[in-house]
Image 1 (cartoon, one colour):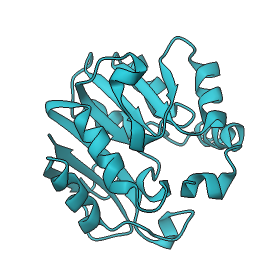
Image 2 (cartoon, one colour; image 1 turned 120 degrees about the vertical axis):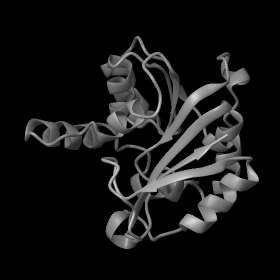
Image 3 (cartoon, rainbow, N blue to C red; image 1 turned 45 degrees about the vertical axis):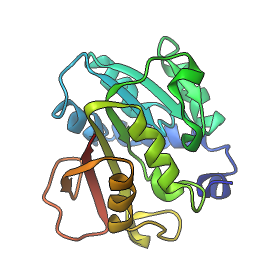
Image 4 (cartoon, rainbow, N blue to C red; image 1 turned 90 degrees about the vertical axis):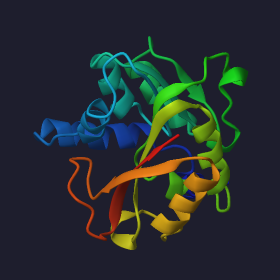
Length: 201
């Protein structure tokens, strides 16, 4: 069982969506991840939203002209995403078993984004496999972007993956480090408790 399932029981989709809707309604910018991605690859690029949740990031990217696919293990989150954007492709998939061929979709994505603490919320011991599966879905030269917390202040569960471990998983999957930031607004990383990492295949 993933740490996410242990945390939520797999029933948190609507609550999660309502929380972000309230943030947006208060005037807070909730599209930093999509803006970050749009600065990396041009409109029309193929994007895999890995751990897409309720679809907030992917729906925004689709509005900006990106060719998106969303995958998540949590059916309650996907139900919200499908209701909000039924025209977009959503799949219930465990990232450790992600295989585009099995889903009947083309591999070779230009960008994979894993936002929202995807890697710290995986089942213990599966992180390297998830990175490997996502890396395999990238075209040569494609990018994977992962943003996740590194300490208790930035995570809903105890910290479980360090940046050096994540970099090692990426290297083992044939990915090369490109850059690291402290926020989705591309602020310089200063060793803090949250990091957005970019690696290239």
